[in-house]
Image (cartoon, rainbow, N blue to C red; front, side, top):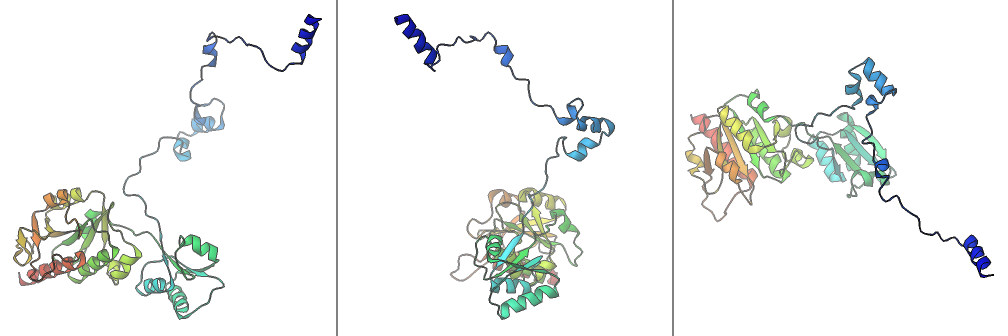
Length: 320
C-alpha cells in the first residue's frame, strides 16, 4: 500500500527533480557565430548583387565607412518671441525666414506692423495654434508672435584677409566675450571706423544671435563675422600673413595714444570684462595695449573699449 501511494504522488506532483547538466561537455556548441555580416557580403542578398554590378553602390547607400565631420557643429535656428522683440527685429532687418502668428489672438498695432514688414521683406507668415507657438518658443512668453531667425553663415578667418574694403586691414578678434550685445556693438564700431571683420571662437563665446544683429544697427549686414575653431592658431596664422596682433588689457605694455603699429595691418584682440585675455592668447600678441583713464572707473565695457581703440587707430592712420 505504501508503494502504491508513493507512485500516485509522483504522478500528480509538478515539481521537477534534479536534472543532470552537460558539465561543460557541449560548451563549444553554444559558441556564437560572430557579428552579422553586412548585406553586401551575404551571398544571394539583393544588396550583394547590386554591389557586384555597380561598385559605387556602396558609397551611395551609405553602408561604407563614413567620413569624419569637419568644422564647427551646425548651428540651429533661433526663435525671437514676444511682440516688442519681434517688431524690433523686423525693424532692424534681422534676417528671418518665417513669422508665426497665433490664431484666434487679439491683434494690435504691433502685430499688424509685424505682418506688414514681414510681407514686404518676403518673409513667410504662418498662423499657428497656441500649443504650437508654445512648442516653437520653448515655453517663452510669445504673446502670439514669434520670428524664426536662420543660422548665421560664418566666414572662415582667412576670408577676412581678402575683404574688398579700402584701407589697411583691420580685424577685431574676441576672446571670451559672451554677451551678444557686446558683439553687436563691436560689429557696429568695426563698420564705423573702417574695420574689415570680426573673429569669434566657436566655443565658449558669443555667436551671431538676433540680439547681436539688433545691437549692430544694420552693420552686421556689411561686416563679415568669422568663426575660429582655435583662436590662438588663428592669431598665429594672421601673424604669418603679415598682421600685427595687439591685445587690450588694463596692464598693457603700451598706452593706446602711443601705439606705433597703428598704420600696420592689425588684429585687435578684446578679452572678457571679468577674466581679460586668456594666457595663450596673451602670449601670442605682439603688444599688450592699455587705454589710459583718469577717473575712478577701473575698466571699460568690452564694446566701449573696442570703439575707443578703433577710433584711435583710425585717427592715427589719418595722421600718418
